[in-house]
Image 1 (cartoon, helix red, strand yellow):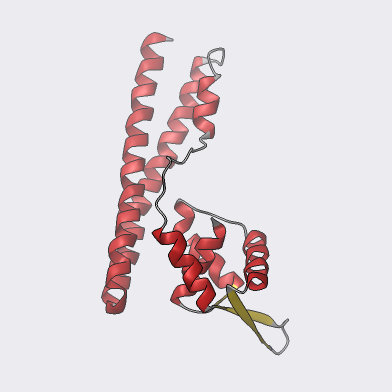
Image 2: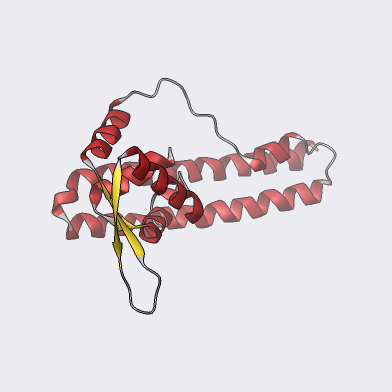
Length: 183
């Protein structure tokens, strides 16, 4: 999937590898993240496939760098992926759920502390979605009228993040109540 994240960003504009990482960290990392080393491996692979091309930019007193641009083949490949329906629900990994599943013999106080910490972390993430990410999207919509359709879909993904955090917080609160009353 990283392949399509890279192609998606390069479909907006040419970028350097570290710019791709910054763009992902500020947007899609909430639901699709990657390490810089993975991005560079993917860029190299996509260039071999002919889905993007690179141009070396010389810099004084710094190593040369490559600016990547999506090719017509890359645009077609991205569009084919975007148009292909997802026919299965994606499985998710959640370490807290895995830990909780096996925590019957963990000290009740420690278990509740873990859940309180997780609740706080999810509340902080919720604030990011509501205040920071929402503002970034509205600012981009205002500054770039040509991205109007994009910002509608960016807002939809932001809203999913917000609803996910609200639901997760509700579940943690219910779980804390259950543990307090039944364990």
